[in-house]
Length: 200
Image (cartoon, rainbow, N blue to C red):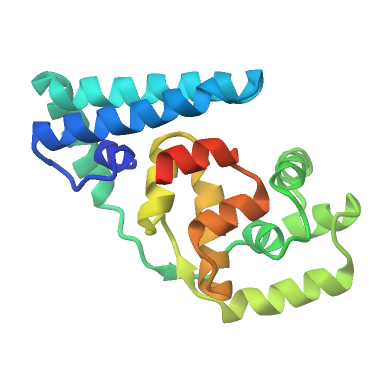
């Protein structure tokens, strides 16, 4: 579970005045971005504003905030440690497959019970040589087991990217030195206008 304060780029339990200022700023930026956006992007911005409104109301209401805090405390018991990335994460990070192709492969994996590498090969998404290289590389790379990048945490909290996307981007950032914003652009996971409004 990501912090609702991450949505507003604030530390946990920031004063209500800071929360209000951050809420007003991000909402104004998104409304401005929506004015110039196409219909699809405008719908996404509308949903994003609903997410922001909901988070803001939760953090201001003492009862809702207490429930949120209890859930967050329970989630914090899971420790973020270094681990080897999953094969699917490496495939997307390296640009061999897209998130959509990974989703298709995982669905097929669930149906057949085959290993993901075999499914990716059967679907002709990767070759045997690529699979061998990825499996060797997998043992040489350490990556966080959870979302540790603050920008990634913010985008996950806003429901703009999934946790898997965040983990893939963290691996890529670590291996290439690119910023999280550059990686989002490269994969085209978040519209440029939304990314600029949220991360300005």
